[in-house]
Picture 1 (cartoon, one colour):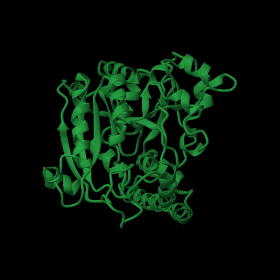
Picture 2: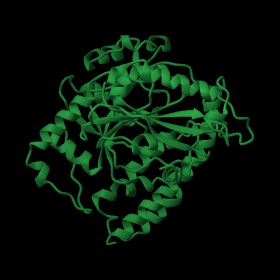
Picture 3: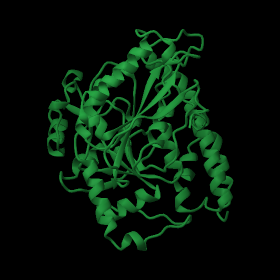
Picture 4: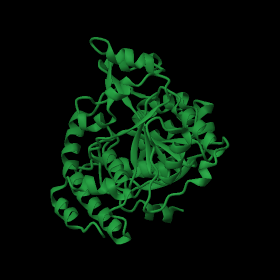
Amino acid sequence: MSQLMGSAFSEAIHPTRIIPFYFKATNLIDSDDVTITTLVTGNRFRVLKQLVERYRGPISVTIHIPLPLHSSFSTLKADHPSRVALSNLHALYASSPLFSQYVDVHLALSPFTSALSPKATSSTDGEGGRQFNVWRNAARLFARTEFVMMLDVDFAVCTDWRGFIRDAIRAASSSPIRHAVRTTPHAQSSIPEGANGTEIVQRLREGTAALVVPAFEYVKQEDGVDQRSFPGDKQTLVKLAQVNPPAIAAFHASWAPGHNSTDYEKYYSIPAGSGGIYKVEQYQSAYEPYVITSKRVTWCDERFAGYGGNKAACLFEMYLSGVSFYVLSDHFLIHQSHKYEEEARREERKSNRKVYADFKEESCLRYLYRYYRDGTLHTERAANAREECKKIKNISKTVSQVPSSA
């Protein structure tokens, strides 16, 4: 198993050892449930516990524990920060029976050095060496359900989107459409406005739909510290968003490309309780919503280290592969306020900007070639790649020169 894990994550920038199922939940798993996949460092244990208590469903979490190169826990002193972090994890898992019921824990062991400073001394301060996409992939790889929700641990689950999906799955299971509808490489089913659960589940199972749960945050950071005060229904949320001045706004509203494709004005306009969904019509490559997908969608590219581009890269490759995004109009998440390491985030974003640009170009060439080779470049499945890759200067000419009969 250790050899397999080493191969699986060999592209990681820092050497990373993955230990799957360090703790394994005891509850029986329904394969058609939705597992939250997330990642955690030692300074986020408190919010992980809050997520477990709120969700009360399957969670697959990768927990990063710093471990110096060429070391093992047994060779470290009892008061070494790495041993302390592992001890704290054991205490966390024992702190509530909900952990042993619902939470699978996978360890990611790697040196805790800054990704931007190869000569930096190994340290457990802050969150240096953050290989978020390596950890995301591990959490999804070991999820034990067909559907997953890729979520950051500091978001509160405010509405029962899990129940919505499970109801849709049960409805689809008893519907003849589930057996009658089949797609081919040249065809793709679609979800119309107000689609029913059967259509949603069909697309999810195919790996061609991602369901967006819109993200919000409190305008005043101090108002967003205590999850117990967060709204639990859309009607209350909309009131808080539309008062003057607003108490709640779209997550990271100052960085419009990150979440604005969700179309918050359309979200507000749909009556609470309608159960409706709508398609994201204005996708752009910085879009990074929180989504429910099949476990089998494309993996996150692991070249990124730290903040900036890493989650958007996951969604970008999904989009090129033929996944369309649909917003659940009755549901939402709210960010729990906390302090950010602003200086580190600035440096990481600056470094990752070029990495992301290169990644987009490479991904476009890879998907366009794949579709061309398979004779599917001009099918509906390839439409996202055709349209999005035209926006990249070095790729647009290539797209325009491919004959439509190919």
